[in-house]
Amino acid sequence: EPEVTQTPSHQVTQMGQEVILRCVPISNHLYFYWYRQILGQKVEFLVSFYNNEISEKSEIFDDQFSVERPDGSNFTLKIRSTKLEDSAMYFCASSDGSRETQYFGPGTRLLVL
Amino acid sequence: AQKVTQAQTEISVVEKEDVTLDCVYETRDTTYYLFWYKQPPSGELVFLIRRNSFDEQNEISGRYSWNFQKSTSSFNFTITASQVVDSAVYFCALREPQGAQKLVFGQGTRLTINP
Image (cartoon, rainbow over all chains, first blue to last red; front, side):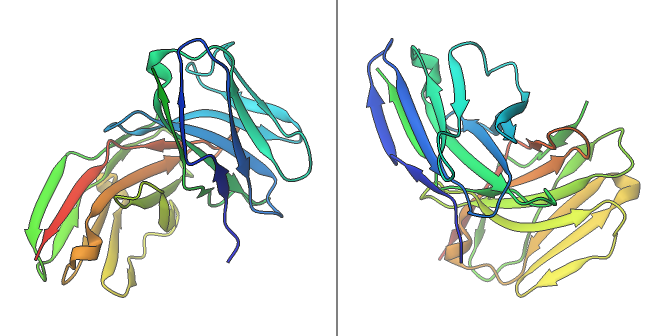
């Protein structure tokens, strides 16, 4: 069964460093999403991406964040200058043309020291 | 604005008991979608069910069942004869019908099944 994959599974970085989180969505899917879950809290929407552009972003998704689909398979989230409060689990999700269901990857646990 | 409330923060039961997880939602949309996701200790989010607002028929899948009541804006999830492997955090979510159709999640209910 096709699934969303994410790398790395864990990332530790120093405050102020740039990180890139990678996702490979399900191959025939068209809509891509990033969500964030701070430890012990609910899952929050960050950004959605369709047709090579951002379709919606939340207040959390400020100028420090960017997304890119550099090729036909990868979907990346970049945080330019990490802050302590960026420590969280980051989930990538994708859905097909119907957008009926979003399927999530296993997540990347980011720890900013 | 859309909102999902899962009032039960934590539930603990003994194996084989039935357990119901509550979910109440708020939306101004007449068409919307509701979801349940499971987050086991390993951390991933596993899709369990999607329900359309125009389909109020309850659904059963093995030991899992879902009760959707539009009149009370609730979408409750029952596990029958619970097992230790059901231990996880369960999230209810609402998807807006327009725009990016992002998911709005509840706070989650941590379910612990004790042997």
